[in-house]
Length: 256
Ligand SMILES: NC(=O)c1ccc[n+]([C@@H]2O[C@H](COP(=O)([O-])OP(=O)(O)OC[C@H]3O[C@@H](n4cnc5c(N)ncnc54)[C@H](OP(=O)(O)O)[C@@H]3O)[C@@H](O)[C@H]2O)c1
Image 1: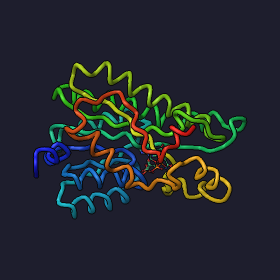
Image 2: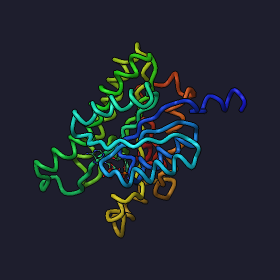
Image 3: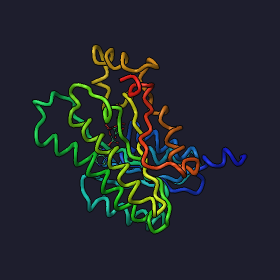
């Protein structure tokens, strides 16, 4: 491999991906493994994670499963211990786990608010804090937080989601500033609509038409559209990049 391509090589790196049992998280874990990283895949459904681990191993990398509830700080602390026990280090953290409700703001309940914020914002923050502490001791690390086009644009039915994703992008900037002295790069990846199991019901009929009309490149994203940007943000190729939200959105935000 020449020295230019070598900068994207993740061989010898250890990655942790939350929400890796399906959808985008699963694909990103496989993409990182394909670029050379060993990966710890985390979420609540162990059986699904075992399938992802098996796929990682067919790529010739080491895969580990950790059953994680990002809404519980004790569970994230156990993940930190697991990382140290199995690998002794962590180079890459992808905060992907989320829970989303789509409904008019008038109808959002307190329970839905709590579940969305606990999974997607509180979970992201404490994964950054607890796993970032391991990176601080190494003086190097790459954190990638999943944001969204809705962090910068409005869509009906996604008021809470948009607010929390704006929070994820803001948190990304704030942590990038606080942790730059420790060599920890913190960036966000912001996709547009991606057809994943949790979006299957939503992306139909009039909603699908409206979404497509807002994407200049004229199609939905697929999970593998996100792999190149993820490898870039995880690798030495982006070592001078921190505090950014990278939109992989077919032009949605530029056109808003
Ligand atoms: N799909 C899109 O159109 C789109 C667009 C922009 C941004 N995004 C963002 O991209 C990320 C992935 O989206 P997605 O559509 O693939 O899936 P998603 O439905 O947002 O998230 C599903 C993943 O999160 C895990 N998860 C949910 N609650 C959890 C918890 N308490 N603890 C640990 N894991 C938990 C699920 O696994 P278990 O059930 O096994 O726990 C599953 O693997 C999210 O951050 C999402 O907001 C998605």
